[in-house]
Image 1 (cartoon, helix red, strand yellow):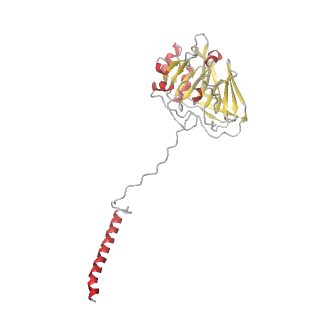
Image 2 (cartoon, one colour; image 1 turned 120 degrees about the vertical axis):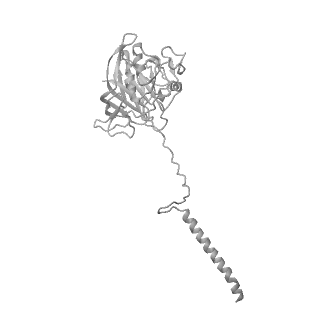
Image 3 (cartoon, helix red, strand yellow; image 1 turned 180 degrees about the horizontal axis):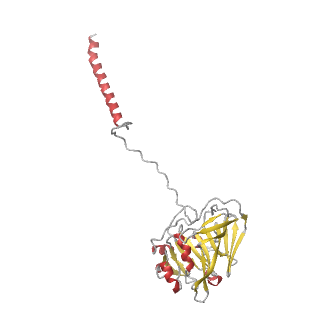
Length: 338
């Protein structure tokens, strides 16, 4: 009995201490948990959110993921002596325009890629100003313009980059005859136009092929003194380009060939200007609307094009008015006289 009595105070003390410990634990637990009612509470720091990978940027010019850089347009020579071209395969968009004497020149637009050299570079035309308005304020590289056009180019909403404005951006190839030997270094050209606008929506849409269309193996577009043929390559899934009956390749030996070919029927009228030989400079109207032929995946689709104002993009739709998607990749737009 005495032993039992001697243990009882110790047991009581242990029980009291356990109760106090439990009460403290409950109190601390309440202080560290969010309160459902009013009053302040102490909360633990929130856990770091899971990192979600940023989706790759998609070029509005090609529909492909990748770099969306500043826009550089380059006026490229296209007579026989100027071929093969350099850097043309890296362009996002290639426009074919009629110039004097029924010949053509190319206007190559770069944004997602910057090749080390592009050319041969030749002179700009009045039509280029209107065509480029839909790109915002891009940089335009060209060899020069006739004196009557200098004011128009200088006042246009673009960054003009003739050799006198960016001498470090140009180089002559001594192995080719002048004037077909002037080449551009795009990186240096854009350094001279650091504020050139980046690529933006110009109306192109990319995606699955529309229903219908007719099977086409080759499409030919004729100008008064030039001819372009585009032959469908099923293995490469692109339209291989020929110029005046000769397969078109670049100086690195690669065939030219866009994923999408657009034959845009436009009005080509005489302008007020003439070249040094007295030939009237044609003006290609790219504002307005009309018919077009969109070729992709080995088929040709009848289309309509619309560009209400110079600052608007150019949209292409089916005859029923639905957007007509291009195949992702390089786009060639042949501005064909209607």
